[in-house]
Length: 241
Image 1: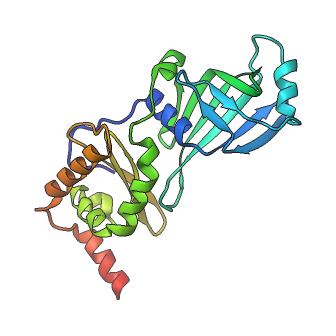
Image 2 (image 1 turned 180 degrees about the vertical axis):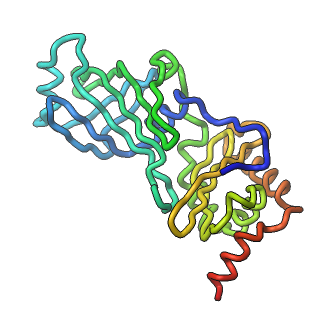
């Protein structure tokens, strides 16, 4: 998969990890051989520590008190799920190993190892970079933006495919917006049996939703003079028939 632009800026691993952490609604916690799932129970400090609000009878409280000092006592797992329904909807998984300690009626988790797993592979994130990083400024709004684009502006998504190399659209049956961040947008191209992703980078980063609208309009203007790739045209014609 590819696109017509040479600049392929994308979030670094630490920023990507913090974005996953900031937007995930649920987390799985493994401690002492037991695994528990929590929904809407965590918050994140500026330094990347995770605060968990757990029931008084949770086994995690016992693990936090009894775990040997200076040893990792838990693993937290977060999933980054694409807002728009697609094949292979998990975009990334974040694994944090570290210690849970009781703190002001909650459990405070400080990571000692951070691993970001994406389709391109797993990356061990530097702890100092993770602590200093901030989530992408569009992360909190991404789900709303992508679902609106897919549902209300399919014509715009179609126009964006004109920036995609024709060979990447061979046998394509569906194209949807998979992700967006301050650096660019990613399209998911689905065929009958396989799928792939194409990155459309912005000419400069977008720091808020207003700037994002400008960046998308710039991409649409760039696509304006291009013709719809024949491979996608044929697929649409077959579908209409």
